[in-house]
Image 1 (cartoon, rainbow, N blue to C red):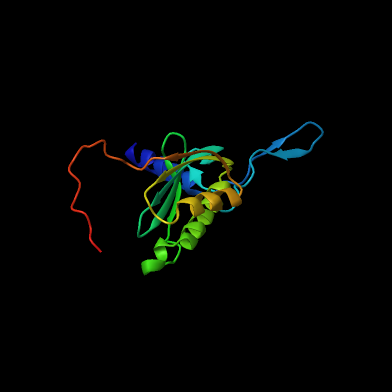
Image 2 (cartoon, rainbow, N blue to C red):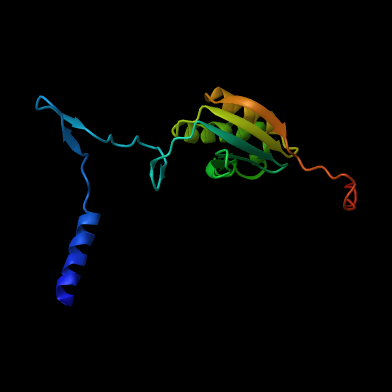
Length: 166
């Protein structure tokens, strides 16, 4: 009895691991219609299938040393991100506006493959790539609905650090 159960489990495993072809359903008149199409190349997959997100939030963090662009859905789940370092810039070139433009284009290309058309932009930090990253998102085909500055500003909370003298 135990041996028969083990062989059934092995057959189920083999059936689960075998590649499944697109199902074909016969239609009246003898013709067959495919049920599912193959996913597009470069598109992200969720555990339920192909991910399609029409709207998202672009978080742009522009520091003095780097620019990071992260795009999430409206719930806050990260869909795509890129930074100046990931785009191939090193050292002081990471902090340039040109690097921020390349980063914005890279992220926009990633999310347009998921079907995203509209984005809300939240900018944080004093860096050089603030406006350039927004412009590159727009030029890549995303519609920018809102631009918010979410740079944290103290309302006379903690004592600030000693002023830098140059």
